[in-house]
Image (cartoon, rainbow, N blue to C red; front, top):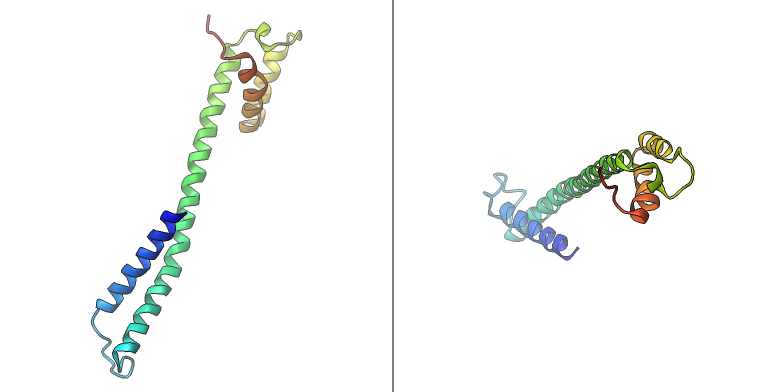
Length: 131
């Protein structure tokens, strides 16, 4: 958070400096004194910041969402491989259909099923050993 605030302040300062360093407005009625030129530059920099900042924030949210969805896809594939490699007796239940049930749960519910499988089977009984 501190880094974002610092970079936002730095960006505002940079934009304000660039606007002030730009050539003066040709119409002398708009910038009659140095104070009003500085004010115009500050307002322009602030306006530019208000248009760029939401795009930067949305870009960060998009990046976080992409990373989270990529991680969920990897977990889904790993849990799918684990349920296929696991023997019937390794599910900790007397029922013989546990493997098929978990396979259907993971396939039909995707990420949610793989997370449930992770906490109920994978974490409890460990990784399936390939024979």
